[in-house]
Amino acid sequence: MTDITIKDILPQTVLGLRRRGRYQELIPQMIMEIYVYVEAHGIEGAGMPTFLCHETSPEEVMQAMEAGTADVEVVVPIGVPEPGPAAPASAPVPVPAPTPAPPAGVPVSTEGGETIACYELPGGPMATAVHKGPYETSESTYNELFAWIEAHGRIITGPIREVYLNDPSEVGEEEILTEIYVPVG
Image (cartoon, rainbow, N blue to C red; front, side, top):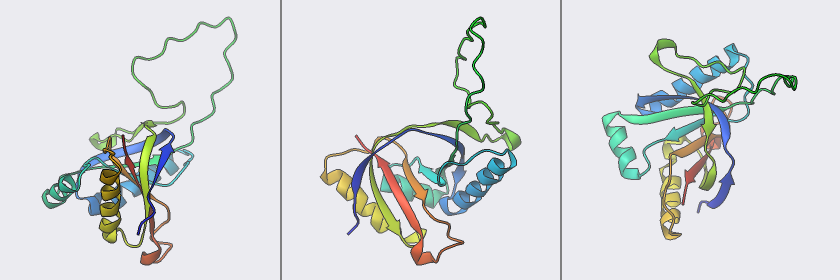
């Protein structure tokens, strides 16, 4: 039996990359791309890589897997640079930009027609469980989580998240830990 709890998750500043394709092909590739980008730009990481699954039901996931059209987003939490020195009191007050901009010092990539974007990943109440073992065996944990959500009268309110708590190149397959977060209302 999987331990399932509700956690109130805080918003996080992240760098994210989003594509369509097959989960098992895109996720590792996109994680590497974001980490190469983070390292190349001297950006401070502030957490583990996370996959956002925009298909929010088992049926949608199965359809996307079969068709190879999954909406895959990978994000990495980053540290937000500290603001610089305060402007003198006589300086004019800047007018905020009409669209959100990345925190100062965080470059945004648009190379190759794709964008690595910096944004705030929303927080809120989430049903969560930890899966231990190969990624390919996480279906039973998901099934327990979805059954728990339904039994407790909750509904899924946003993209499901998988936070990769350790590196599969550093631990055995049976020791891989994936924390699953499902936003609920």
